[in-house]
Length: 358
Image 1 (cartoon, one colour):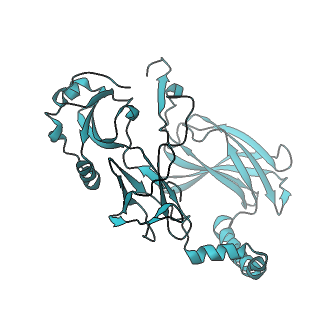
Image 2 (cartoon, helix red, strand yellow):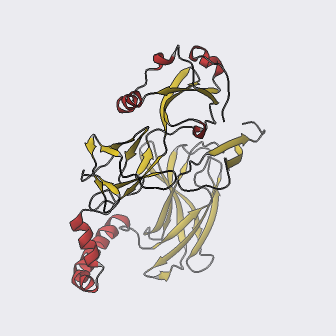
Image 3 (cartoon, helix red, strand yellow):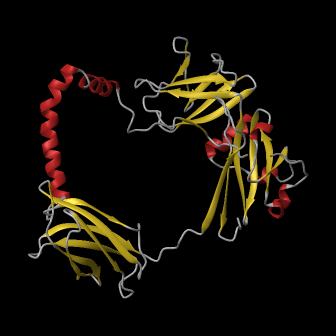
C-alpha cells in the first residue's frame, strides 16, 4: 500500500509568548492560537469534520505561534485546536502530538499495523480500532491485524495509557490484489507459467494492437513525432515545430503540403502554410507567426499531407491568452540538516516576484 498512513490533520511549524484573545484574532491575523482539547473532543471534531470555534472565545490560548511557522515539537503530548484568521474568515483545525509511530504493511492478504514509540520499540499492549472495529495483536508478526478486506479510507484510533493518535488508512486500489490474483501473477512469472500463457498473451496483444491502430492511426499513412517550441501560444507568437516522420519503418523523404487546420464558427478551416521539403531524411522543420485575426482559446492542427491530399501526419497545439510566470525566485529550506526515523520534517518555502516582493 502506498499513501498508507497519514496523520488525519497535521500541525504546522516557532513559539511566541503573548496574550492574544480569539475575539481580536482578525486584528492579529499573522498569529495562530493553540488550544488543548480532550481526546474525546478531538475525536468528535474529526468524525464530524466540524469544530465549534465559539467554544474558544473566552478561553486562554495554551500557545501562540506565527501562522506560517508552528512547531508541534514544542507542544506536549495531546490534542489541540489551532485557530487562524485568513482574510475575513476564521479557520480551525485539529492536530495531535503523539509519541506513537504507526506503519502499515500490506502482505496482499490482510493489512497489518505496526505501532512503535519514538525510540523504535514495538508497542504490543495498545488498543487499536479500525473503523470502530478492534484490530487484534498478533505476536507472530508483532503487528495489529486489520480485519477489513478492503480498508480504503479507514479511520484508525490507537490508544495507550496517556497517549492516543488518530490516523487515516488509505489503499491504492490499482495496487491491491486478492490472494488469487497475486497467486496468478506469481504463477505467470514461473517458467511453466510463461509457457502456458504465451499464446493467450500474444493473441490478446494482436487484438489490442488492432483496436489501438484503428482508433489512433486510421487515416494516416505515416508515423513519427512532432515537437513544438512552446507548450501553448498567444496570437502573434511564432510557432516553431520539428517533425520526424517515417512510413513502413523507412524515413519519409518526400515534400509535404503543410496546412493550419482549425474550426471557426462551426466550420472547418484549412490554410496552406507552405510546401515543406525534408531538411534531412525524415526530418521536417518549419516556423510561422500566428495571425492576430485567428481565434484565441482555440485548438489548431498542423496537418502534413501529400499532393493528393493523403494525410501523412498531424499534431495539435493551443492558442490562448496565457500569462507568464510572475514568480522570479524560489527558496526552500528545512528546519534542520539531518532527520531520523520518526522525525517530523518541516519545509519552509518562499517566493519573490521580479521586484523582490513576497
